Image 1 (cartoon, rainbow, N blue to C red):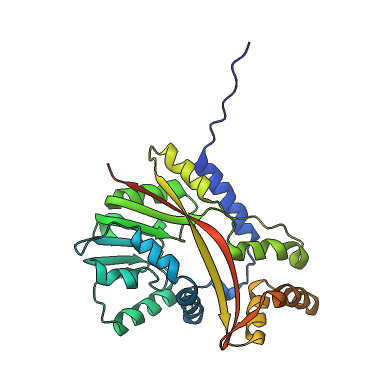
Image 2 (tube, rainbow, N blue to C red):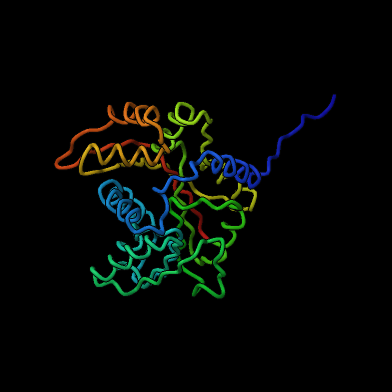
Length: 282
């Protein structure tokens, strides 16, 4: 009797394959995620303030920080975590490649009198720990920023930069905006949508690195807020690459039932699940 064949997948290769497929699903001329543009960063920051308050509080509560802690925030965006963290710790180094995001973060820091955030305007893949950072850091965070192609290499650098713990926050399921992409990919462009790699894949990579993390599931709400219905529809037409009147009609009919009035704004929201994956350094 032959022995059963045990499947031992290379999770880093699976991550690469899923990331490559996910990138192929993106609309090439979608300008909404160009974070070098300050108007995009402002929109993200505005929506983050309204929709991410609970997540930010839960994230900070999960960190074992002290007033002496040195924190590295990878993919810091407009300072969603860096700004509220800064008054609680000794210093924060924020790695963020988007010029628009860095500008918004700097504005927030100046407005709040925060002087202990240092910005490194690079992709994490391009960061040299010895040259670009003042490593090591007590705590390393990567929240909603794990878009690296070679995730194993990115995680090795994070682990090398930390002395106490590393905290990753990544999607356990398809995020709200991914579900919209999946719904509209075929009707608009005749193309299937491929979701990006999720937390299960991330856990597999870490396990094969010899890192056995703790995992906690967290709810994640996402909101899009605009001053008018027309402004919202215009945004989503561009977001989904609608160029013809028929494509615009498809987007409008999909988005319109999801819009609700809240105060002075038009809002669309949805929920998904976030995985907090973290480990203590040995």
